[in-house]
Image (tube, rainbow, N blue to C red; front, side, top):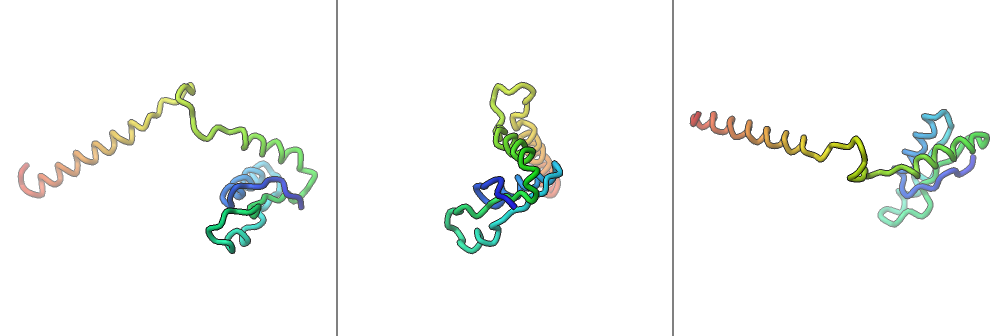
Length: 110
């Protein structure tokens, strides 16, 4: 086994290992219990993704390069992104209206 990726935390290590496994590349997370033993201290190279078969090294590096090149936050000028959170605020508004109507019905005002 060979270390293919050093993650910032154990969650990221599991994400990368899952991506590799989804591509048919056997990988596992190492250092899981070591990170828990130090509690709230900063991770010290505990979260690692280990490659089971070193013959998959090139494919694994391509998958990891794609993962690292991702843009986690869409930019404002990104085409096709119309979601400004308006649907959430509209739903909250409708829920408020329904709650108010139920309140008024309960008091016999309506």
